Length: 181
Image 1: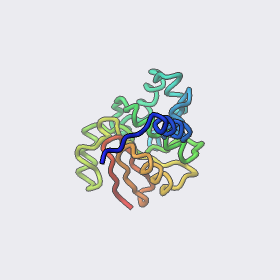
Image 2: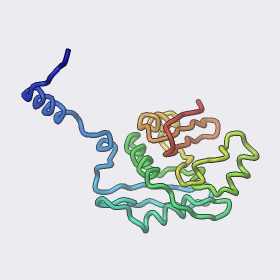
Image 3: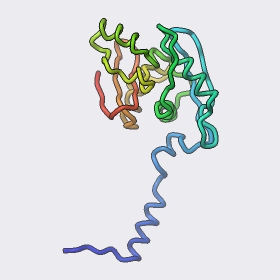
Image 4: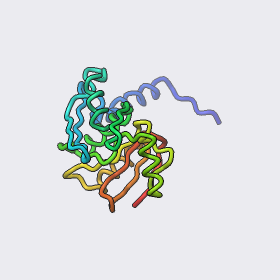
């Protein structure tokens, strides 16, 4: 049996849908005129707190500063951090109500650094997204690791690894998956 919807019912459904809360991104601040992030690199002590997106555009100077702070602290090599990762961090920060900067354990990782780490630990992927600027290992002061993990899982922005023994959460913008804990 074929179900046809009348024009009147179609309009009613449209009005109902319009009354629903806005898109998920709106509730996480992606519709705001400005997106800010703060970072503290725990290996170098460097900080950055800045607007990386203003009025619909990424700010090149801010992205360059973020790339520098999140560089491979072992080699000094700087690479572009994927803006989707920054947007994910912004959404997570908004979701958990964070007011302090992310504490960064690992941002970008050069292939040489990644090989060295993978050789010494089974927990380091040989094709890590850190090498593409698409992954970060962080914690947020004042926010439990469990809550940080929960926000990452809820937003379904990519991979979420949980490392409570090492006191960090891995977040990436690869395919959605989870491990640890």
